Length: 205
Ligand SMILES: C[S@@+](CC[C@H](N)C(=O)[O-])C[C@H]1O[C@@H](n2cnc3c(N)ncnc32)[C@H](O)[C@@H]1O
Image (cartoon, rainbow, N blue to C red):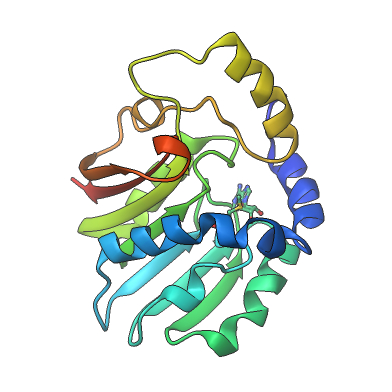
């Protein structure tokens, strides 16, 4: 199954009413670690790419200026409901994570939680995010990846057929999707499911 924006819009419309109840608790430790590693400072501008239902928004510290972008109006509507619980100033915009319509070199940091494995083209998403960052800007990535030094097994490819139907690809490797991107990995730590999920800090080169 090839993932497309059209399919993602359809499947995340279906996910939107149940996403937080079904997955909120499971992902929370990974989110908390990601935010801790990003070390956001008051006055910084942070871009949340594929912000979804806004599960990261209440974890943002006071004094931060946040912009959340997502393709799905239904997921964004859920994010909007969380704004009263947020300490950060938040703006939400509908848009495509593979071609972000934001000013270049304008953000101090970005959050790519559970999005590089979802967008049709993870490489384009990372490139577009890097373009939006100031030189030296940092990205936190919390996601599941195929290890860089191995190919997906037949079982994983079979399971991927079904996971893609539900809106996520389990066969992508960070090494492959970041090829040719001007960035370096500063930190890479294992997270949920015995390290299948990872939290990484990537810096714009
Ligand atoms: C698995 S959810 C993750 C949401 C959020 N980042 C989180 O951590 O809970 C993936 C999100 O990506 C969004 N999405 C899918 N394709 C997209 C695209 N091309 N551009 C922007 N958002 C997209 C979906 O609408 C959905 O909200």
